Amino acid sequence: MKTMFAALLTAVALQAAPAFAGSPTVSPLLGRWAIDVAELPMPPGARPRSVTLEFHDAGAGKWSTQVEIIDQNGDRMHAEATLPLDGTPGPTTGNYWADVSAVKMPAPNVLVMQLVDHGTPASTRIYSVTGDGRRLTETKAFFGKDGSPILQTTLFTRLP
Image (cartoon, rainbow, N blue to C red; front, top):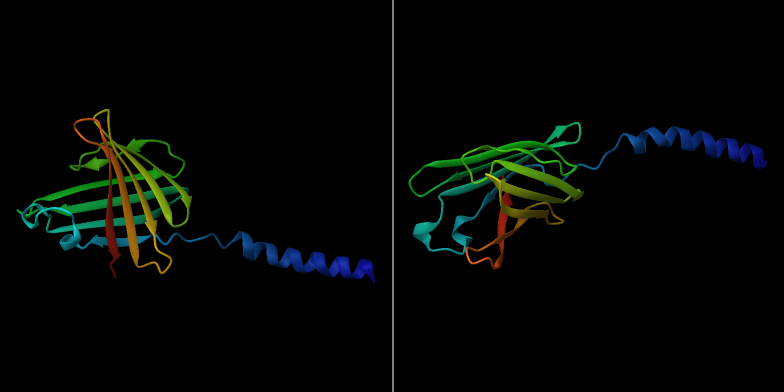
């Protein structure tokens, strides 16, 4: 009886193993996000017209990020990078204030990004998604001109 039970348990476990192995967690960060510019803590005349952020799983352990900012004059700033999620630095292209970045994902709903501009640390950004998947919080850490640490929080809403 014990042998039969063990054989049955082994057969069930072998059938279930591929289902667990083949179901990786999909990050709720994936998709397009926009800032409600009216919520930005700056005078209305200094606010951009729009800010969008897009995350893609590039496969093979890599993550793709694209940022687009349209300023008050309609000029476009952008940046994009496809990097391994192990923190290895790589190039960031575009005209946003960064030319090298690194990313890590300590949890499916959290992304940590570090930006460098021409050899100088620019900022560290932590992105986290709410449980309902509708809001993205960006916590930006950087240093002011006087060397004092600054933390800013910006909220994004998921775009269709």
